[in-house]
Length: 162
Image: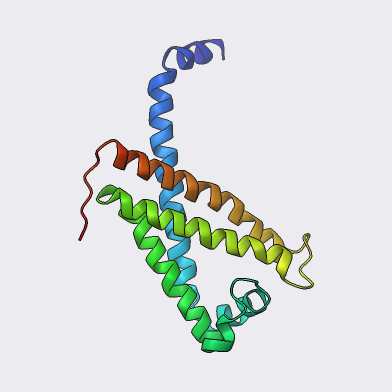
């Protein structure tokens, strides 16, 4: 253990940089993958019915189902989540688009976290509440991804605007 500790201390900078890059990539692309998967799932009747009690009681989305119906509202959310996923994943060739997608993800996650207080009968000890709490970690990853992508823009990464 002593040798490992000394080795890591002597090589901390190179390992820190490598682990930061690997961890950041995992964080960014897992947020994108989660948004893509749940975005696609929104097109199913099961998911449209599952999210209806959350959206119907949301101070932000209460109007959605009345305007578009349960499935239409879920479909709109799904399209938005898929677009956000694609934007986040664009980091390697357009960091500004990725930053905007990451900020959009952060906004969407803030809305979903609000369901914890706006949904009647939702116990903070329930599986549903536990499922929503994971969005706090995704919110942090989204904000980090936005900051990192904006840092790349500042550092002069290639940005294509088309």
